[in-house]
Image 1 (cartoon, rainbow, N blue to C red):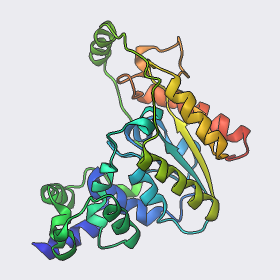
Image 2 (image 1 turned 90 degrees about the vertical axis):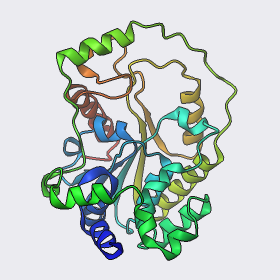
Image 3 (image 1 turned 120 degrees about the horizontal axis):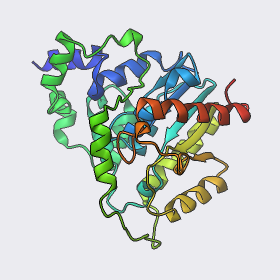
Image 4 (image 1 turned 90 degrees about the horizontal axis):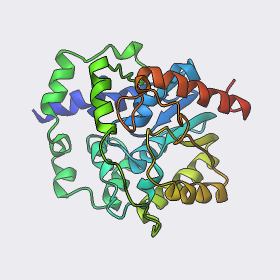
Length: 287
């Protein structure tokens, strides 16, 4: 069972848990533009609208530690790196790089990933001596994708569209009708782990011929802009290009553009990606 899990973990190229990372490892040096981030990157940015040689490495539930650890596996080659970040996450005191846990299956394959997992105490002695423990809770998913892949990865560029039915739009409308008043917290402090990875990313990209773009995709409602401004100020001081599209749709937020408050439907993603393409083209980053 041990050798089977390790073999499957190295070979599978479909599925969000391990397969998408393996796919990324296969295409990363042939891609001239790569998108990283959470589900908002995965569902909101249509990769082939930005580059025919692009790849979307956005994965549900991932944050900056996961993204930077994968970016650091890239060679010294000219590439555009787009990282989706949510400003509020930069000030969450509870963030402990827990998204790195998803990279445990790669603990023995990459020294840099092993180092980051150890840095924040995301491992134990079993990870070193019993490699199957790195695949905890994944055997069934590995077997499922080995026997019946969720998709043909050869024709997949990482973007996963969301198609919203009329019934889902009605449900979302009822959610919006609820009381949404919230306070705006202005007593914010940078999460040191988040800041560590931001600095690490900035240094790596400057030293390895990467054009770094950080962006925040639209939200149906933004309850506080203070964190956006604070986040933007730090990136500006570091000379990092940042596009904040939080309020992009503004008053034109038709329900057909949205799956929920933070995720765009495929219709919304088409409009948003076109705007990103125009902004990157205007800066001469893409053609």
